[in-house]
Structure formats: structure tokens, C-alpha cells
Image (tube, rainbow, N blue to C red; front, top):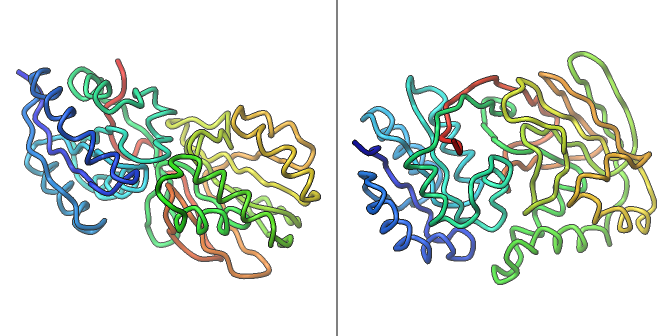
Length: 293
């Protein structure tokens, strides 16, 4: 007997990519013997309600959208016994799918929904309980994310690189205070990131050693450099080799406290999740996710 799922779709995700993929996804799920019904989200609050209703009804909540909806639904399912999350990539970045080994073609990813295995994965928690499944970052990343979110949809996943390049022009270094499991670090520079996963921004491997199930966050500190040096090293993020730069420090811990000398919005999974000062935590094995067998 096939699995029974609630397919939760954000039709505007990825500049309409999710909506365009939906008919092929529905046909593929039917061919695989998966019992499903499709729910279209109005907003994140609606998506949370749909996910909880699915889990309580014995269904797997499956998102067809971007990483923002994945993190949102993961947060909703954390509190439901026996809940399982499935992910079909339908956004611009799709970094959770990329790191998890889920095919980036949503039709091909349906095979993971039908035949994948349930694995307990960690999530990150920000502030008063906001959940993220990828990377929470701030500082220069706050500016770059805001620009990317306001950029034209036709840029696709290049929107994240566009945001970074635009943000460089007006950037001035900030002073950050970071405490990782009680150990304090202060520095002037670009950004602070707490990574539950390896990648963000459509394939930027900011934390190449981060794991989805190790019970910890990889904390990436980017100290002050000149703008030209920063731009020169930026392409290295796509391979994760930027961590060898003298200006980059990678720490690891369960709890991260961050403040700065000026206000910053904290972004995770492409969306704002809090303001400084903030506490970021790893929540080990917070929920089960369908992963490739």
C-alpha cells in the first residue's frame, strides 16, 4: 500500500516554479501509487495549520515550495508526535534538497516521497522558538537577503549572488559579539552564521562540514577584509573553500548568542526570523524527514 500525503504547495514559490511543476508532480505521485490531496497555501500560518492537520490525520506533510516553507512546516511538525516531513523542491534556492540528496527536479524527487526512508534530523531554533532547517545569518547577509527578496523573480537562483554583489557597495564593517556554548568571541567584520545545514543562497556551501543530524550548529564568523578581497573570495563559497581564508573562523556548538554594535535582522531559509540580540540553538533529532534510501 502506498503512502498517504498532504501536498502543501506555495504556487508563487520560485517565481511560479512550484505552480508549473504541480501537474507533473501530481501525475508522478499517482503513477507511484501515492495517495495524496493538494492544499494551496495562503501564507506561512496557513501552511502550519495544514501541516499539523495532516500529521494528526496520519498523513505525511509534503511541501512543494522553497526552503522558507520547508522551515515553516518543520517548525509546525516539531510538536506533533509521529509527524513526518517530505520535501519536493519548488523554490529558487532549494538548498535543503541539495544537501539532503533529494533530486532538484521536483518530478524526480517524487520517488523519494514514495520510497524514501524516514530519518530523524535536527533543526535550528531562533529566539522565542522560530524554527529554521538551514542556515541563520546576519550582518552583511541581512542586507544581501533583503535585496535578494526584493529582486526581480526572473533572476532565478542568481538572485542570491545579485543580492550579495549589490550589498557590498554600501557595506561598512560591524562589530559582533558571539558566544558559542559559553565561549566568547568579539570581532569586526562582515557576518555571523549559525548553520544546521551546509548550504544557502542557491548552492553557496557556507558551512561545508555542517551535518543535518549531528546535534550542533556550525558557526561561521567572517572577519574584516577589504571589499576587493571579499569579492575575490566570494566565488569560493560555492565550493566551500572560503573556510580556508584567514578571515573566516568556523566554530561548533549547541547554543549561539549574538549581538552587534547596530541593529540587524536575522534571516534563515530565505526569510527574516528575528532581530539582534538573539539566541540560536540546535534542536537534535527534532523531526523525521523522508530522505533518499
